[in-house]
Picture 1: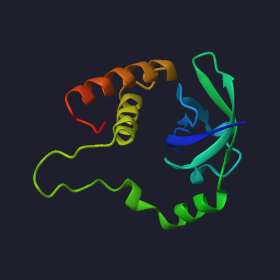
Picture 2 (picture 1 turned 180 degrees about the vertical axis):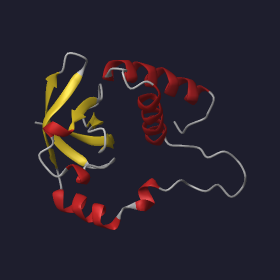
Picture 3 (picture 1 turned 90 degrees about the vertical axis):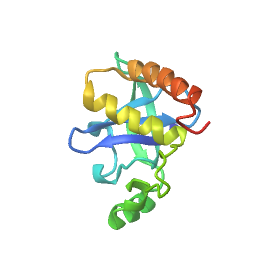
Picture 4 (picture 1 turned 60 degrees about the vertical axis):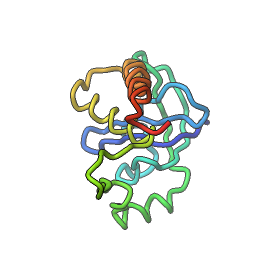
Length: 140
């Protein structure tokens, strides 16, 4: 069993991605492989899972929430604070953390080109994050 954090999960489409704790390529997860109620799977939640070769990249199976009670509490509260955009009062651009930028970038790629494989997303995202860092658009 491997553990990691959910980067993104679209409950309507039934898929998302997990960043493994040991690093490396993000892992695709599908709703059919979730072992808890799918509405509980939210970005930032820790999960445990088995890793398989999905043909188009790594795929998670047998996905469990590491702390189901915390996930249920967050779902009940709506946990809007974690998803609310930050307001910048000085009129300057908001400097995102690397993880925030990666998450928004992944979301944008999946909305724009849903046929991208997990491997393609990882390669594109790595290069774009490097570019953003070189211009100080994101925190290092």
